[in-house]
Length: 187
Image (spheres, rainbow, N blue to C red):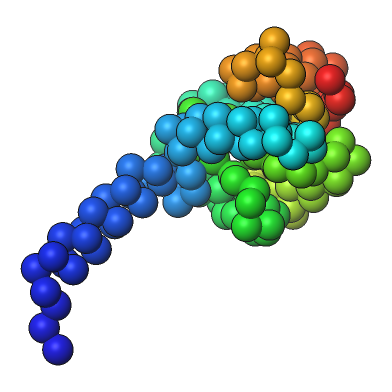
C-alpha cells in the first residue's frame, strides 16, 4: 500500500525531531534533549512534591586517552560508555544523555539519593567491566569515570541550571578526591 504524502511528511518530521534530540556519536540523548527534559521534570516537581536526581559523569583523563590512542579510539570509547548508560538507565522516565565532550548526565525523576547512587555504582561497575585499556591514566589501567549525584526537591528559588551545577560540583569533588569515585548529596 502506498504511503500518503501527508503521512510521509509526518513520519519525516518525527524522524527529524528524534534526530535533533539524539547525540549522533553515542546514540543517546544530546544536550538539547537533556536541558528540555530537565526543565520539564523540574517543573513537574511543583505538583508532585517528589524528588529528582541528577548524575553527572566525566571520563577520567580522557584528553590523555585521546592524545595517546587517537580520536577514532576516543570516539569508540564514548560510544561504549553511551551503551553502558543506555543499558543502566532502564526506567522509561529516566534519561541518559551526552552532556558534552567526555561528560554524560542522567535525569532520574522520582528517584531518591540512595537509588540514584546505586545507579551510579552500577554505571561505574559496567564501565570497569568494559576493560577499555588506558595506559595514560594514573588511576587505573582501564578507563574510569568520576560521578556527582544530586537529589533535590522543588524550590522556587532553585533553577534547573543550579541543580546541574550542584551535581557538577560533586563530580569535580570526586575528581579532586582521586577520581573513579562517586560523590553525592541531597540538597
